[in-house]
Length: 68
Image (cartoon, rainbow, N blue to C red):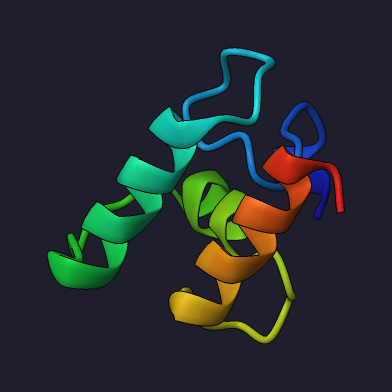
């Protein structure tokens, strides 16, 4: 997505590291969705690109962190 060109999939907090902090933010997005969330955060959180942020994205994020 052009508007999110500086973003990386899975790096929700944009600290250049994909780690447990990104998973925590993803869980918060799922449990307490905000109406005015930055679309780039949603793009970054949708790891499997199915246009939904859900537990499958968390599973994929864990796989990225563990190197799989």
